[in-house]
Every structure is written in C-alpha cells, then in structure tokens.
Amino acid sequence: MRKIVPVVLAGGSGTRLWPLSRSSHPKQFIKITSENNSLFQNTFNRLPKKFSRPVVICNEAHRFIAAEQLREMDIEPETIILESNGKNTAPAIALAAFEIINFNPDAIMLVLASDHDIKNEKEFHQCLSRAKKGAEDNRLITFGIKPSRPDTNYGYIKANKCLDDILQIDSFKEKPSAEIAADYISNGDYFWNSGMFMFKAKVFLEELRKFEPEIFECCRKAISNPNRDQNFTRFDYYVFDKCPEKSIDVGVMERTNNGGMVVLDAQWSDLGTWESIWHTTSKNKSGNVEYGDIVSINSKNSLIYSPFQLTSVIGIENLTIVNTQDALLISKTDEVKNINQLLVQLKTLNKKELTDNNLVYRPWGYFNSISCNDNYQIKVISLNPGAEISLQKHEHRSEHWVVTSGIATVTLADKVFDLRINESTFIPAGEIHRLSNNQTIELKLIEIQTGDYLGEDDIIRFDDLYKRS
Picture 1 (cartoon, rainbow, N blue to C red):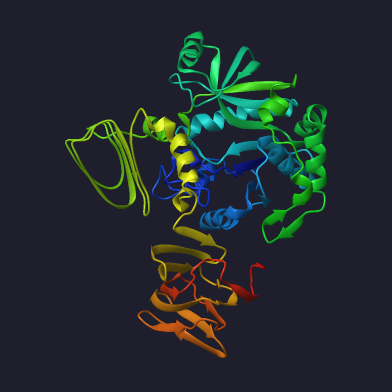
Picture 2 (cartoon, one colour):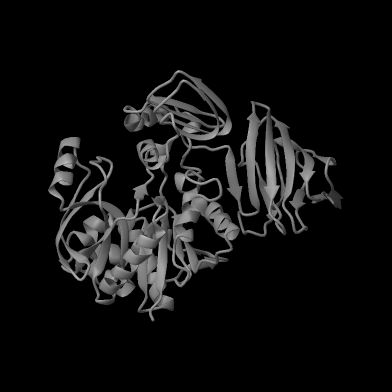
C-alpha cells in the first residue's frame, strides 16, 4: 500500500495574532489552543500513525524552533527544507515534491498548513481516506470546509456534481465582502478553502510544469544539488530568489482539469486571527474566552489572553485583551479585524515589539529575556541534555551565570569546571568561554549581562557544534 507523506508548511509569520505571534516566533509554534502543544505540534498529533515520516518547510530563521518542537515529540522528519524567503505555496510545495520523488517516486503528498485546528480527528481521518482514492486516480484533491457561518477571512471554493465522494470544482473565490459571504452560505455550493491538498508528487509537478514552467524550472534547479546539514535541507537561494511568487490555487488548482474537492466537516478552523480564536474556543458561563492567569469580575463576551502574567478585569464587555511579556493589545471585539492598520503604524514607529520576541530558540535550547535596559540584560537560559553553546567571546559585554537547576560545565579560558545549583561564575568581556550540559536533564541558569552594547551580534565564534558562522 502506498504510504502518504505529510508535507507541513510552517513558513508563515502570523502577524494578525500580534502581539502573541511575531515574525521571530510566529503563531504556529505557540501553544494557543493547548497548554501542552503548539499548533505546529498538533498538526502531527492528529495524523494517522501509518503515514510516512514528514517533510517540513519553514523559514531559515525558525529552523531551531521547528527542530526543537519535533524533538519534544520524538518525531524524526524526512527533512526540514529551509526557505531563505517565502515565495508562497506553489514554489514551497514544488520544493517538497522534488525532494519526495528522490526517495519515493510514486508517493502521495498530503499538504498541510501548520496553524489549523481540527477537533473531530475521526472525521478528519475518514476524509483523508476519501481524498486518497482521488489521488490514486491521479487527481489533485483539495479540502473544502463545510462553512458554519459567513466569514470574510476565508477564500471560498464553489463545487458540485459529486462523483465517488469527490466534488467537481467550479471555481475558486477570493475573500468576499460580508454581503457576498452571506450569499455563499445561503447558496449551499460554497465551501471555505482550507489550503490543504492531497496528490501524487509527480502528478503535481506535471501540472506545475504545464501551467507554471518558470516556477517548475526555478525549483528544480534550486534543489538539484541540496546542502544537507543534520535534518536540514538548504538549496540554491540565488536561483530560488528569481522564482515567481504564486499560490498553488492561482498557479495550478484554478487551471487544472484534474482537480477535485473533498468536503471536510470536522470542526476545522484556520487560527489566523483573534476573531477565529474567539469563534472556535469554548466560552465560560460569562461568555468569555480566558487563557492564562485571569481574574474577571462582572465581565462578559470578551477574549482575555494572558499566558505570562496575572491580568484582572472588572466590568468589561465585548473586548479583546492580549497581554504578553512586553506588549498589550486592547480592542473592541468587532474592531480587532483592523489589526493590520495597527501593525502598519507600529512599523512606521520602528517598534521592536512588532517583530522581536523575548523567547528565542537556539539549536542548544532557548533563552528568555526577562529584563533589559541600556547597559544590562537578564536572561533565563535553558540547555538541552548533551547540548552546548559555541566556544565564543564578546567584545562589549560581560556575563554572570547562576545555575538554578542541573549541572553546568563551563569552559573559561584554559579552565574547565562544573557549577551546581546556586553556584555562579563571572565571564569578563573578551574572555573565550563555552557553556555545556553533559547531563541527561535540562540545564537552567540565570545570565546577567552588563556592558555598553548587548546585541546578539556581539558574538565571535571559534568552534560551533551547529556550524554557525
């Protein structure tokens, strides 16, 4: 039996969920709907166990986040393809298809976004089985969501004429106005466009070559001689930069004669906006969606999201409140759809909170900046078992390390020594040093930086396990 290869697209920036989601740490890697797993991790959790090892596509800047979250789930991907800059879904899927046919020429691809929520997994699995039959017959299958309401945040698919559980696609529709969306729902032949697909890799590439030969050639040349580093796959970014930017819908699905749609009615949601979070999350008896440490008095019909600190509200109604470590959003619920206007203003004002995040992943673990000023910064640092930072020095800052759990092995100049809980050491500016975790448990410590410049680019590396420059 031909196995299905999941292809997970994880390259989005998720800016409409600001301030929780930012380009440095986007929504798919955040625990929005679950305290245990991110949206990215839930994408793998809901897949049938019989599927092949997945292919992941993400931005170069997010490679360590993706790799760490896969490691947490004990998932070994076939590869993680790293994009230097996104070119929309058609080129991304093409890169994955060229990779897949190298190890499985007859493979069926299941293309999934990494930021969806699907509550009825049993129905989802049955839908995948129906779609596979169409893919086996060399059809390009997309998944149309049975809509629960008129929604202007989704594109639509008009489909009819059912044949063996697969509908014939009439047309794709862009995100409509509220009036047009209401007409779509009353018509009954319109479905939300999920952005999920299933087809044979070689069939997709044949259709791409027919309709978008430039995209086909750019992707083929770019990945013909890949650079493989552990689970990561890099390709010729110079060639890829010349690739046209186009979605799979516009590039292929709207033009092929071999398309088909399977109806998915499994409590699906694209968690791309605070509106969608509001619609899909269970409300308490006051009609509120509350996540985090919330104290609410005489308040109703509001979304209050505060995963990092206590947030208290009194007498509010119909508000969206999102409180993070360094930014706070307050909006009327019916106005939060205009968040892009706010993001434009934040960009004009050059606010670092628009893109930067206090939590930063590295190949060895992560750090969380909990306090920062002009001449000092305090971080919580976590090193995975067996991990180490590069052998390095800083020109502008000194560091003081205090271990809070685990055992740290410190290299400082020509000395190597261990630090245990409550023990500390001082790293002067200009001194070569390394931090290692040689234990089988996580290492955590507090790092206090002082100096006239505290930027992350003040690192001179002499030796690095992860081959960073």
